[in-house]
Length: 376
Image 1 (cartoon, one colour):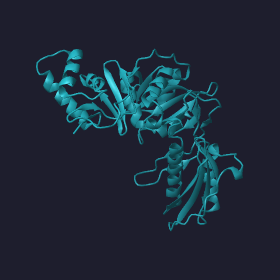
Image 2 (image 1 turned 120 degrees about the vertical axis):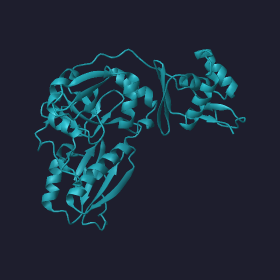
Image 3 (image 1 turned 90 degrees about the horizontal axis):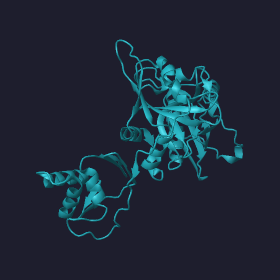
């Protein structure tokens, strides 16, 4: 079975125990991801050697033309099919790290224009249900990973939908055609980004669509993105993307059947937002001997100021600074003594009673979070 997942070519070789009917049903479920690349262009996997009753070997070639492979084994074919979906997705995401913005989201597209609405949410919070409902009106793009190029174009990933069957039971991999979902048109372009907020109530609620403040939107999207930290200027690039689609919205709803109507306006061209942020990713002082007790910024990947807040991306995640935090971070671009740091913050915020103790507390918190480092 030859597949293309987020631009990466895969070849799946089934173990001998996988029956012809199982192979055909899986090929049908993945038919919208079928690859037409000639056989000699993609490596062939070796026969799987796992001792599990059901197995498969997978080979692929990443964008850097490096070949790799892995094998899977499971106690049932249903578990094998679920594991295959997961491993293909993860391998494709890793192969695209640093190249694409990849959101943990489902997406559908306008059948005429290719305008894409991405619906971002964590696992188990309604993405697949939303995709299965919206995909009957709009073109099905994906129920798992929305991959966006720097120019805002979207790489389709019309994988089988992973449908829950019950606690402890593998998710059923159902092809979009079996659910009568529309095919997405060519030329997909991101139009809107929406955070899904599904609420469970005794009575259905009227869906509400609201715009999310930029800082809150970035903080919500980063945990539901894959390898965003590997992209050049990860926070700045995400802010630019958000601005290009007129900001991020959140839809609060209880029934997925209400989504087509409430989301309909988002498939039109959205106005670009005026820039609401400013880059703050100045150079951190070079490594070397630091006199005892000095405070300076720790290494970071990117930083943006949004109104009175500062978002800093570190190697381990993102930190949101408010209050005197941004002034401390700005001042610590070069090593400072505690006295110098306190005086720098006072120039920005004044000298209310107890301000020195407040600076020390904030400084210690930022050191514990890895935003600042202290010379020994």
